[in-house]
Length: 492
Image (cartoon, rainbow, N blue to C red; front, side, top):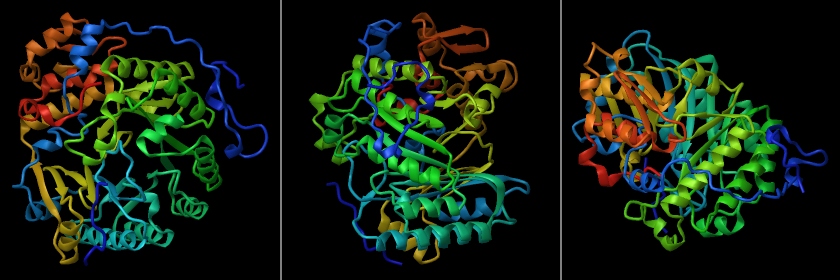
């Protein structure tokens, strides 16, 4: 099958309990809260020189280890097929479907996505996804038990409702989906329709992530993503009306012309809609990697000190409203499954970020999608033409990956627990001393001397207010970092 799309680059209360504020009259879309911001006082407890030194370092996000720049071409379609055939009995799985299309390119975006104004290429991709799923299921020695499904992109909510329904039917036919499986999808509120919201609810979707980023109009203009509060509120109203109660928001700091006051105002407005979770990301300016980011005026970007202050302010607002700070960049209501997993020490991290599901396998479908099997990681071809040609011809589109060694697995477990718990006892990972022997002791000593971690024997714990530097701590266990230091975003 040949894809017919080609890439181009072209006065509201100030009380603490804002979490459950709702519109008293009219619809949510009619409710546009405005907040009188309190004066911004300095909040940083970490010395400015440390913020500058550590914040400027380029480090992975550690949604995998090794990080994707270390995937290699010796893991190919044949390798992937063999790994599927060797799937152990009793393995549990999760599914990821990548829909790499948007209606327009947001200037800040770092995703693998392509622009189309038409539905036909999206329908063609849906057909390819169904075929790829069938190919993978046919190679498995038994039906895979699935505990979570995630649609990402791009804007997967652009799928025509009928195509989405076909994809869900295919998954139910080919895999054993748990009755309480989490089915999640990422949504651009600018393009969501009431019909699609109903289709998502009818299809079993029980969690959505809405891309908010910022509600400051001048920042929206700078990143070419204009979406007023009423548009977000309308999307939430439609989704809740369709029976989807778990709603997440993505927000960002470090955007062009963005200020601390902008960040606070955005947080206070979205809290009025009672999200279950929020993911808070720092904008990564990498125009050498994503050419469309070149349209952003680099001189308008906040510096590392201002970025740190924005992140601190956002965290203060969210924790002050009762949300639990989780890992590097997530916040959840105390009764949310993610907050519970955080307290229980069962939180996990993968390519979709933090998750509550402990699946052994991640099967990923679509151009550029990354999956994980017991043997290692696999990634599909990024170009749509390459992906479409391979799947259309009945071949897997695996382009690269990484077979894991024993040391890789041990380092991955250490880094994951650090990223999830902000604390580790290395004696719990292997024979006494084996895990600590993998650490860069000089790096750990520097972090301890600078007051970012407490290090006693085998126990390493992130200090208070040092959360933004969590990735810097994880770097002490990364054996590959020096080979790719210039291919990652800055820590802050």
